[in-house]
Each structure stands twice: as C-alpha cells, then as structure tokens.
Amino acid sequence: MKEFDMEPSQGDPICFGVIADTHIPDRVKSLPEGILAAFRDAGVAGILHAGDVSSWQVIETLEKIAPVKVVQGNRDWFFGMKLPMSATFKANGIEITLAHGHRTMFHYMVDKWAYITRGYLFKRYYDHLAVDFPTADVIIFGHTHHQTSLWVENRLFFNPGAAYPCPHNRFTPEFGFLTVLPDGTIQTECRQLEE
Image 1 (spheres, rainbow, N blue to C red):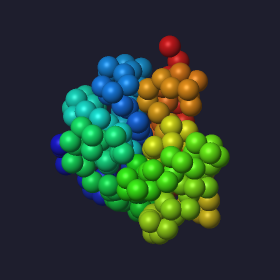
Image 2 (cartoon, helix red, strand yellow):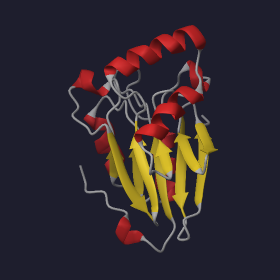
Image 3 (cartoon, rainbow, N blue to C red):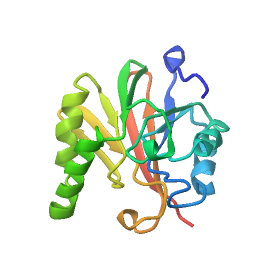
Image 4 (cartoon, rainbow, N blue to C red):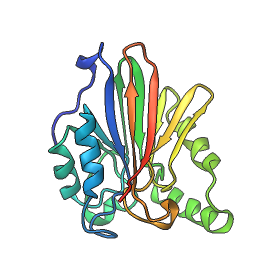
C-alpha cells in the first residue's frame, strides 16, 4: 500500500473519503462506481476504510484515486488479510482514529448476541470506542452498517455506513466525507448512492 501521511499538508483543508464494509467478493462483486466517482470528483487527499474490506482488489481500486488507510474488520481475517486493528494519525492538529469497531472475535460474538436480542444501539460501540481510544478527537468506525455522525463529549464518532446494498441502508450503498479545516474545525457529510 502507498504511504499515507497527512501531517505535511497542514495549513490547507484536508478532505478524506470515508468508506467501510465493502464486503467484496463475499456479498457483492465490486465497488459501486458512484462511490469511486464521488471520491474522484471531491479530490480527496486520502481514503479511510474502516474494515471488512475482504479483498486486496478493493484497496488497489481505491489507491488509484488517493492513498488509503485501512484497518481490519471481523470478515477480513477469513480472507487472510493482515491489517492493523486500528490506526491513528493527525490532520491539521486533529487526532483521528480508524477502527472497525468489533475489537476481538470474542467481543464480536458477544456483540452479535446483543444485536440479535436487542437490536442496534450506538451506545454499545461508543462505550468501548471511547475507552479504547481516549485521546482521539475523531473516531471513525464501521461494522454496524449504520451511518453515524455524532458528537459525544466533544468527540466525533463517524460511521460511513455500508458501501454495499443491505437492509440497514435500504439497499442503497453509503459512504462519507470528513474534512478537517486548517483551524481544526471538523466537517462531515454522510451520503447515500443514488442510482
């Protein structure tokens, strides 16, 4: 993968394309062209993938647009992908952490049971992400397939949703943008692909 370093760009707005849960080829064959076009049109400085990539082809495709930072999702180990569980970097002085949100396979199974019995609750993810990454200003996560852009206790929790059609997104692929302005102001945009 290409080296991904945002610190030298300080002083200009930095726009990232944010994507997660692509699930290629286990659920769909390829990335939606509309997402790729949106990242190209925005001229993103980097692409942040919050896990469940499932194929190196996804990373190679995204790297044709911009450098990619990616973390391991719960499905990625099935495909032999050795990726970091989390990644932290700074952009215009803002500390950004990227994680899938499942922690370990044990935590994944416990969460799966909670999801089956009680449904989706943002609080379950907030509780462990906030503890696991106490210094992050922004925590980008995937796993839930639910778009989220919430400020909690002066920290942003951002989930771009699932990049493939699934029931959680009404069968409309989702993605997002995260922009960090030179003064540290953070802007997010959640998008659904309109086809």
